[in-house]
Structure formats: structure tokens, C-alpha cells
Image 1 (spheres, protein in one colour):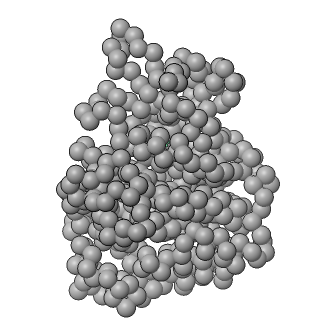
Image 2 (image 1 turned 60 degrees about the vertical axis):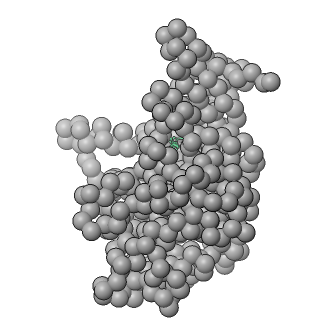
Image 3 (image 1 turned 90 degrees about the horizontal axis):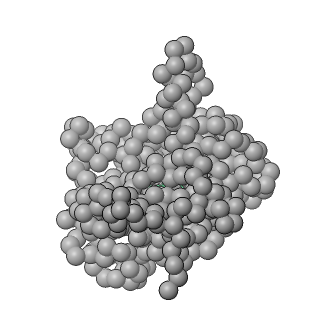
Length: 402
Ligand code: ADP
């Protein structure tokens, strides 16, 4: 049996992220001198043992091998001492990535050229195409989960909410409690528990639009506001544009209200400098209300936008930026704000970093989040492929992404 190395064999350089279950550190492997990222899995407060998100992440990433998916190198543990009495930590060790897209957007002041945006979007699609072909949906596509290195390579990270799906079992009930609010597709906002990998494609549309229009596309304050923002631009869903939508649990939220038309193309045309006709066409296909008509990652890679001038630049041609992670840029901005006379100008909208709300009590009329019980009982907590039945959220409710 292979032995697990201990975290003492790594020199910690600094914190680059704050995850759901602990911090993420930049470190150096003393054995190989390689830079790594170590995600700490805190075990002390876990009533249910090793966190399900960590199990999923290790299990799924262990078997993945693609240029646009982050590499899991190994799992290490802290040395057992009389002090920690066996309640130490486990670390997941990844290849180190110099940036996440959210941090990079801050550092670059959102000012990316179209060929660079095409380069990022293409790599995001290639990573997702690989995952979807392997029957894995990511379920938390957002800027801080897209990691980028100094060679310009973008990789999907944070597979803690991911799980496998079985194309043959299209009636499988998953938890509704996934995807960070601003990137959450309409089917999840309307309470769907039967959904597909197309939930990730909505996120791609939101990220691509954010890069082009230089601000988040749907920055909702809570679930109700999120629905209103989405429907104000994409139109109110109805049986004509999206057959079956009226059967979704929270469809009553849109009933009896003024039916709004689809204004997405018009909205995008305000940004003609960067949003070409081809870009607008691709965005409309990625942000299709009906998930069955929403474009797949494979088809999106073939879209004209990637095959017309300006062509996507080569990753190696992307400018070099100082290392930027959301955790660090956000902290820097907060410290800047606290300094007397600090200039808030030029900083991106802080709301972009606003987490999804798990608690609906402060959002009048917002639909309640699907309770774990609604997602079925006795489901496959480990995301086993092809396991029939339902998916259950953990008892501590920690599945809702921030
Ligand atoms: P969690 O699943 O606990 O939310 P994430 O995997 O999202 O944690 O990591 C949190 C942050 O840590 C990311 O947004 C990113 O900035 C940083 N991070 C994660 N993985 C890496 C990596 N391999 N290299 C560099 N930074 C990373």
C-alpha cells in the first residue's frame, strides 16, 4: 500500500484562497522543488467524517487527465502528534496555478482584448467538453474556479460540487442546491432537480459575457432578484420558448407577472465594440432559457466566433500578470478601503464577489432553496456513476456554493 506523505515535506509560502473546508496555500515541495497548491481539509468540525465535497473532488480528479482540468498531484496529511490527537488535517495537493479568473479580472481591470477572451473561453469549453464527455458535470462554474497559469493555460478547478451523470437516466433527481447565484441557470432558479450538464453551459455564457461587457451579466442580490435580472434580459419563460417550464416547482413566481420579451441580443448590442454579431449569436445560444436547446461545449467550440478574426490568441501570447487570486485581490482592496484617503476608483464592482445566499429569509417572496429532503432520500452521496435513484445534500447543508 502506498504511504501518504506528510505536510511537513512542503514549505508553506502563503495563503491564496479560502475554501469551503479550509484554506488553500501556495507551497513548495521540498523533494521536487515544485510549486503546489495545498487545499486544507479541516476534519475537526466534521460530524459526518471526511467531507463529501473533498471525497468527490479527489475521486473525480484522480481519474481526469486534460490540459484544461487542474491536476491533482497527491493527498498528504499532517503528522499525528499528541497535540492534535489524531484530529489533524488532510491536504489535497494540486499543481500551482498563478491566477484565478476572478483575481485576474481585478488585476487586469477587466481590460482583456477580444482575442484573449476567445482564448480563455475556448479553453474553458475544452475543459468542460472533456468533463461532459466523461459524464461529469462541474456544477460551480464561476471566475474563482477557473485557474490560469503564467503560460496562459486555463484549467477548471474546484470539483467539490461536481458529480457524474448518466445520460441514459434523464429522470435522475439531483440536489437543486448547486451553482453560485450569479452563474445559476434558470432551471435551477425555478427549482429543477432533474437537470443536465447544460447547467454548466449557462455559466460559460455568463463568464464570456462578463469578460466582454466588463461587468457581471446577472448580479442578483438573492434568488428572487436573480430571477428578475435573468428574465428582464432573457425574457419571461413560457411554454412556447421552453416546453415543460410551467411544471417546475417555482414557476408560480413568474406567473401573473408582465411577460417580458427576450432582450438579450439588444442588451449585448450596447457593447458592439467587443460583442460582434458572432459573439452575440454564441451568447444567445449559451444563454438559451430551455436547457435542451442550450448549446453544448462541443458545438460551442465549433462556433464561428472562434474561427473568425480576431482569432483566439495562443495561450503563450497572453500578457504576464502578477499572481492574482480572488482571496488576495479582495483582501488588498479591503485593506485599501480601510486606509485613510484610499481611492476606490478603478476597482471592479465589489458585488461581483457576493456569495450566493443560502438563507432566503431576507429576500421577500424568494423561493425557498430545495431542502435536502426534496432532493430525495438515501441517494448516492458519493456520486457513483450510473447509480439509480436520488442525490442527497449533506446534513450540514454545506452544498450550496458560496
Ligand atoms: P473550495 O472548494 O474549498 O471552495 P477552491 O478549490 O475553490 O476551494 O479554492 C479556493 C481558491 O483557492 C480558488 O478560488 C483559487 O484562488 C485558489 N486555488 C485553488 N486551487 C488552486 C491551485 N491549484 N493553484 C492556485 N490557486 C488555487
